[in-house]
Amino acid sequence: MRQLALDIGLNAGPTLANFFPGPNEVAWKHLTLWLGNQSVPSSRSPVPTYLSGPTGSGKSHLLRAVQSGLSSHGQLAGWLDASIVDPSAFDERWSAVLMDDVHRYTAVQQQAAFNWFVNAQTQHIVVMATGDVAAAHLKLREDLRSRLAWGHAFTLQTMSDDERRSVLRQQADARGIFLSDEVMNFMLSRFSRDLGHLIQLLNQLDGYALQTQRTVTIPLLKAMLEES
Image 1 (cartoon, rainbow, N blue to C red):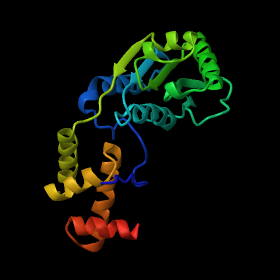
Image 2: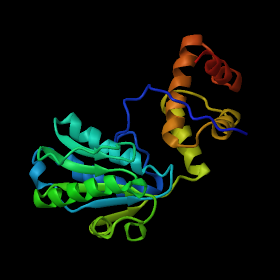
Image 3: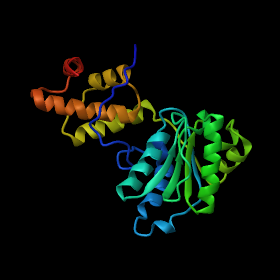
Image 4: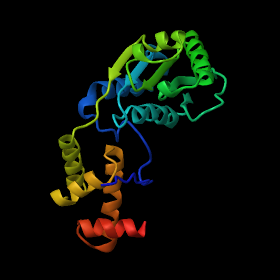
């Protein structure tokens, strides 16, 4: 059965508050503590952090959450991912350097990432990066790979179906929604299993149920999709 990845824009975006740690609580706590020291930003540790894990484990969510948290306090962060073909020069105003999916970087992006890393270390600015494997196994230029391998390292895991169901049940209960096993099975089998997408789907379903004054059922979910 084909899975659908729904583009639902009801949530503000990735934050540490809307990340559901599950098996990744240690990494989440590490970033929460680092970001939480807003009163004295200069006291934040400049030791690099590297998050590895498969697609859907939440590593990009966490990196975007750090960017969002810094932005909410008027702080800038350098951001680089594989979609940025012409990376900018390092900016000394940055409070952090954030590099997503480094395993996909081209030679040009690797050169920029190395330059950013060296400048960040000189300025005592933290570097946070994500990749699909442990830093030691990245197929990158050695000077960049060795720097990514130094510092805090966390291996993220995807949630099990039981964990996804538990979170969905808790979220539905918090909204006063009765989420039957049938509806939950439908959501897990027909949509992206990424928890962020599922929570956004639940948010939209909650709003649609209130608007139509109907209970949450599979026919209601199908009707909502037909109107979207």
